[in-house]
Image (tube, rainbow, N blue to C red; front, side, top):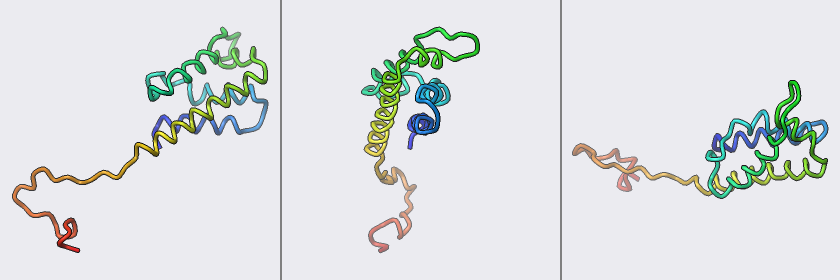
Length: 126
């Protein structure tokens, strides 16, 4: 799993915790997604992440609250649910992308220095 997917995994774990959805959403963003830049994501996910980040940082915070807490405070519960679902969907898409990119790499010897590879690495050795 990529480092990026780990950030989203942490956000999803915060979303499924206890408490009101608004608290869970602001915690998910502040603790896990805030450090990410739009350019950290694959190109096909950037517009959704940018819209999420914009929505969660659009309100100026009061006192010690974070921009995400201030923004979520102004949302309806339905809006908060929708943004939480966006995080889950982005995570799912990241996992699909990760599994599609992982493949078995082949060992290629460019220059063996005139030496033969060990028998266990060749078909003749089997």
